[in-house]
Length: 229
Image 1 (tube, rainbow, N blue to C red):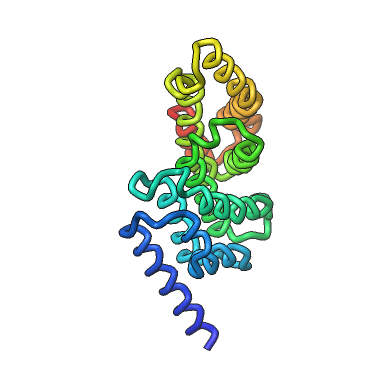
Image 2: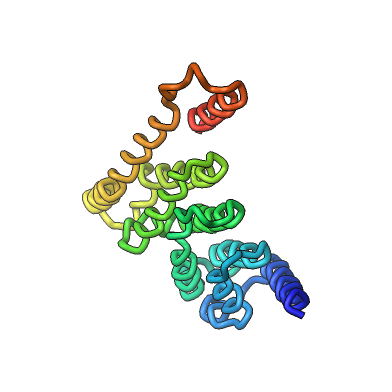
């Protein structure tokens, strides 16, 4: 009976994820209170994350930033509940008892938030720094497949912070430059940490000469992966 209910639960959530891909124009305040959204978000606290749950949350993240769904201002109620629930998973990134696939699923959700909410994060608010710190946890993971999920976010954030277009709405040039300087200062320590992290990851280990052929091949592939990013 339990397995049947679990299968039904997954099928319903997968159908909901498919519906989200096709349906737009529903406000964030409506979706934030939707029973299936509540079911998916509450399922994040389950001992094992199902693929269906992760797919729904991922689709919700994409939906909340889609241009034809009203944009971020309209979807803010939904964004807030998504961020709150996904952030509750941060500690599990360091939990050695967690299944690796679950850790990958959690990392994927943080990476999706980073990629899709990058413009919000770039404001440098206290809330955005909480997300950035979680993404630093993902980037610090020893598994390259997990850490690399954040690479696109760091590149996009750097691009937004350094180009001048995002600051034109702050009025005159002095105000624009002041806001730009503030944001760069907020994220300075973050990128300093990233530089030190990457430097450590690409540094040849002391036991380099004793590595097996397979370990050496894996290290070189990882090193190349960090270098090209």
